[in-house]
Amino acid sequence: MRLSGIVAIALLGLSGCHSAFVDATVSNRTASTILLLEVDYPSASFGTENLAPGKDYHYRFKVIGSGPLKLVYTDSSHKEIEGSGPSLNEDDEGPLSVVIAPDGIHWSAPPAKH
Image (cartoon, rainbow, N blue to C red; front, side, top):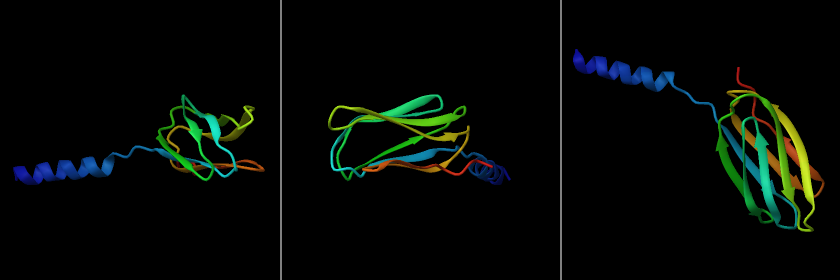
C-alpha cells in the first residue's frame, strides 16, 4: 500500500507540472556577419556578439508579463538596425523564428497559450 501511494504521488507530479517555454531561433540569412544581436522580450532579453551568414542562434526562455518583441543588431557597415515583432503574453509557448534576410526581418511567433 505504501509503495502504490508513492507511485501515485510521483505520477501526479509528472502530469501536473508543465512550464511554458518559448524556443527561439534567430537566423542570419544575409551575406554578412551580424554584430551585437539582441532580442528583447517581456521582462528580459538575450543575444550574441555575432552571428555568421547562414548560422542560427538558439535560446529558450519563459515569458513573464506581456509585451512586444524587439530585435536590435549591428550590420557589417556598423549601422544599427531595429525591428519590432509580435507581442507575447505570459505563459505563451512554442517555437519562435526570427529570420534576418536581405529584405528585412521576418517573425513567426509561437501560438498563444490557451
